[in-house]
Image (cartoon, one colour):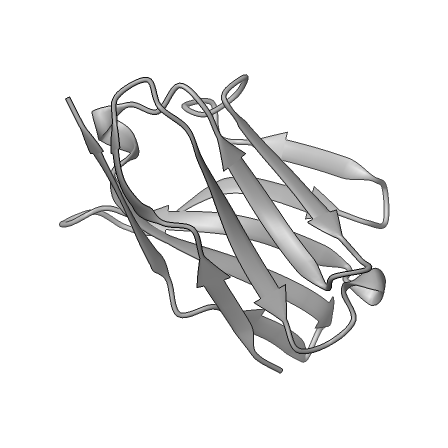
Length: 116
């Protein structure tokens, strides 16, 4: 299974970006999908996660109200809509998808840089 991210780039503070994560497998049966990020010198952190079991979505406090996770099963693609971007959102963003306990995959990462 391959996850390919796109949509990263350079944006000014206050701007928006939409990250995409195209899967080589149907997203219809995903159990958990998420977006994580890693800034230079920092640990990777969870940004947003959706669990299909309970239909629960959670966001890091730092992005609540600004980021939205979603998916389009017809396109086998997951998204992270990011609005009101801040310089502290600068990081490499990774998508993650779990189909089963032993089927946990990561994308290669896409760079997001927010200038002040």
